[in-house]
Length: 373
Image (spheres, rainbow, N blue to C red):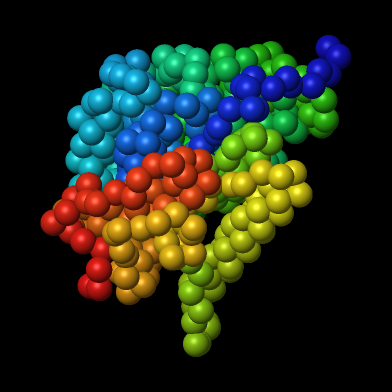
């Protein structure tokens, strides 16, 4: 079979959104970003939403609810009830420990299986084929065999060193589990594939090799691209909600080898994230584009948009360094993360997408301000 080049499947002149990894911290921060994008009439304008890890939990809920959303004048009127509240409830669960516990003791069941089962509670067992055609939702995972990005979406499952499977019949919960399977605790997530289902693409060096086409061993998409940028980096307007943890120094290095391994992983992840971010801004500048970037460790004062609401540096520091676990987040942690994601996206969007929009006067959860802790 001759190799073909995969064709773009979305209009690159329209805006695209990336939701980063970062566990439940990211899930909640992105909830705030979605709320503000919706209030500004921007959320329904995205033609592709790319997500990683904790961001894929948020994107998965949005995707699974899309056909039930009520849109009036470009604004979703039931976003809170359909998307935000179910996610907040989900973020009170102890997902990682239960998945590890049951996956370790139930015969024939893996941690990845249990993670997907938990997501089925949220997504009600629907498949990628049940998602809307537009916006396109892309859930990013990493192939432990090839070391490359795996895109899981309605129109394709693709690892461009192997090829692509058009219209994969995969549960949404499995796609989100693969995207959020933090190594080594929650991964791999195994996806069985039929060798004959793979379509050869140009440069697919492993196409037809049964060692790669019979099953995929997937881990967290953040191992490859924690910002979810690779699948949207050629769009004219790129909006990024980044809840990745800022890197922290340590005065003493541990001699305990598991801690050293995790520290090395943190260093590699931080460098990859920093390089992706620098490349995004460099490419956009060279091409006359302006990325709309809202980061969990950002400074609202660095944006040109006027502001009435403030977030103190101490509060930002605290929220940016909350755990990346999939374990219960308190009412205060949830509300403040949502408030901060909302405010960070507000100032970024009003600076570079809708400068005519007025500065807001109240947070989504006013009882949980963003001043000093």
